Length: 91
Image 1 (spheres, rainbow, N blue to C red):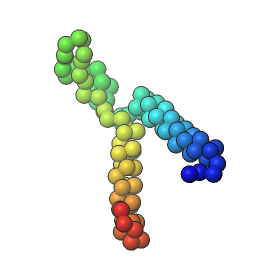
Image 2: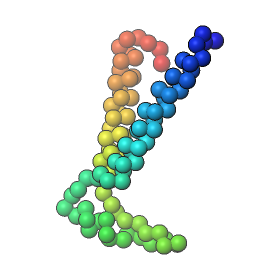
Image 3: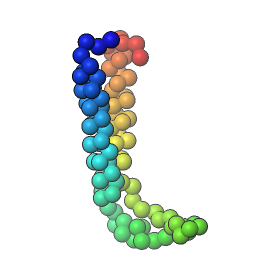
Image 4: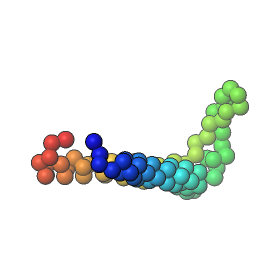
């Protein structure tokens, strides 16, 4: 039981706002950033498959933001496990 009810609200806001900021930055990053190569523009225009309802598949470049988020998650997970092992904390 908490002595101050406002503390629950503060914790909720502390979880909610970073999540919303991350979602906005992630969406903007996916929309505008990707790795550019020699044939990036040609790959974005070249249709590799057509499906029903007018859907088309392209071999577009992979977004840089996704690569950074995946790499950061893997690095964080590795160091999380290592530090818990070094400090002797049970996971």
